[in-house]
Amino acid sequence: MEQTHSIRQKVYQFIRILFPILISQVALFSMTFFDTMMSGQASSLDLAGVAIGGNLWMPTSTGLGGILIAITPIVGHLSGAQRKSEISGKVMQGLYLALVISGLLILIGTLSLDWIISQMNLEVQVVYIARGYLMAIAFGIPPYFIYQILRGFIDALGKTRITMVITLLSLPINIFLNYIFIFGKLGLPHFGGIGAGIATSLTYYCLTIIAIFTLHRHPYFSEYKLFGHFPPSSWQAWREHLTMGIPIGLSIFLETSIFSAVTLLMSSFNTLTIAAHQSAMNFASMIYMVPLSFSMALTILVGFEVGARRLRDARHYSFIGLGFSFSMAVLTAFLLFLFREQVAALYSKEQDVIQLAQHFLIYAIFFQFSDSIATPIQGILRGYKDVNVPFITALLSYWLVALPTGYFLATTTFLGAFGFWVGLITGITLNACCLVLRLKFIQAKQVKVPSNL
Image (tube, rainbow, N blue to C red; front, side):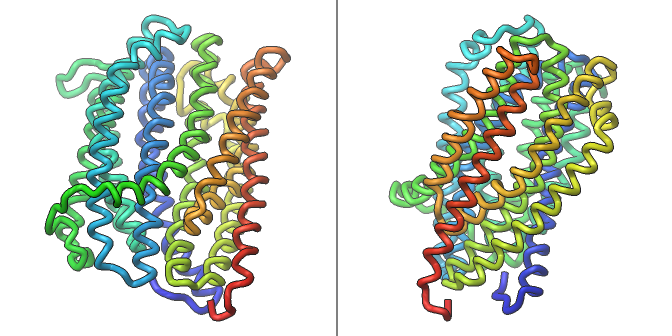
């Protein structure tokens, strides 16, 4: 990355950083998308099983992964401050931390998985598929978390195109593995939804191997000597990382887990409703990759400018990012409304599932506008290393407003399962309003900074 001196240069650099991130996020999420879509082509039971398993794995992986992506603002600030000699040590400590978190998650998951699934009112076959899917995913946890650190390091240096290429190389591998494991091709057994977990786990290994090979061979990264030595673990470095990473991870967990909680509460409805809900939620989550990509790009750019003490430039990037994000939300909402029937048909051959999923997709349209504001602001605030207040607003908005509201509407009104979606829309909108106020407060504090900054 480089310093910019005009709005035009900032827009160009923003797009240059953003576009590869957007492609990477869509491709990375496409693994979950193809897991769900291809499982749905096997049967509605497989779709429901992967839905339950995926909605247990998603908040866990994104929440703990959120702790690890704190490496992005850490590296960004060091890069902006021209303290490059410190970067390698921070990344290596992040890799150690990723392995520790992986081990703890596998241990806790092994001890608690059966109990968690037993608390749901699910058909026996759905339980079997969900459990098998999660057990398969567990084998891919260590490489997945290692990749989060490596990607954060690469992106923080502005080389987002490299992570885009790595992810794009991994996507066809995932699709091919899904095909052979879900449907039992090339002489392999027919695993159904469990095969989606096997394929994703193996893809995580491929993703990480490609990333390590790239970092080892690419000349740009040679000056960092990332794997030149392996320093001893440092609790001080871990504490610095965790101080920022835990609030980020908790904020992401609170946001993603509310969607998973809703899906799990859907277990009181029939398998048809679960399948239709998951189809719509899965596609809405894919669209969410757009504001999430804006968020990640803004963390990189704002963090770089704040590290260099160019606070006016950081504010300019904030306004540019929010303007682009909201414009994209208008476009995606319009397209989703027009093509909701075709979208629903991607997930199932059963007409009843397709019809019901279309109704859920109408509600998903309203997610776009609030997400287009709230999610980029979260990224901006991370660039300022402001992570505690967004955690509090997420807790308030999602768990004290969205979930109770949705549960009340779903159980006491004619809305039924759609009531949960109305509750989600309410919580997302409240969180967006809170984050707007927080950003105004943070940037107002910068007004007193000398004008040369």
